[in-house]
Image 1 (cartoon, helix red, strand yellow):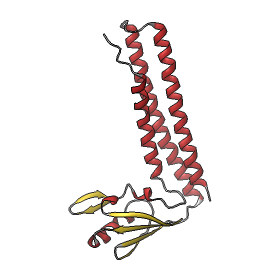
Image 2: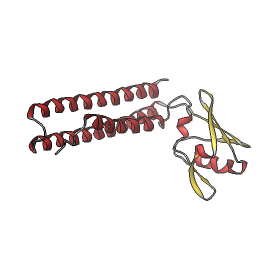
Image 3: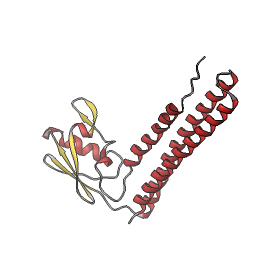
Image 4: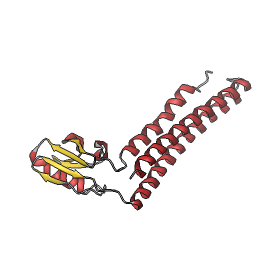
Length: 186
């Protein structure tokens, strides 16, 4: 019987929680304007809910101002309402097809809250990586028990799995540190 264990497949699976973390961190508001801030916004358009980027273009006007160019003039009020109701604490101002979204300065308490949210996202990613590690270790133990691989090979592969896990967790920690610094900048 062939060994179902593949270190490369495990490493690929470990990248998924990291990619997910990057997307979640991009959605966190910092002091600077970023078009990715409005990615989670869903708009009621043409009888269904669609992402904002399917009905408008988001650009950065200034350090604390986003501009949303709505493609269909009749959708402007729906886009404005969706941004206001998104829970991001933004108050858009419509001017025809262009909606200006000023980003208020973050106070110290809000910065700490955002940092806690970032830590929670990072911990979820770490847990995901550890679960993948556990799956890999279980496969190795089963392969060794079934006689598909030798004990020495199993130990070597176990060490490699641990190194891949440590590398993934370090990447998560670095992403968190960068985002934390970005949030806490005044």
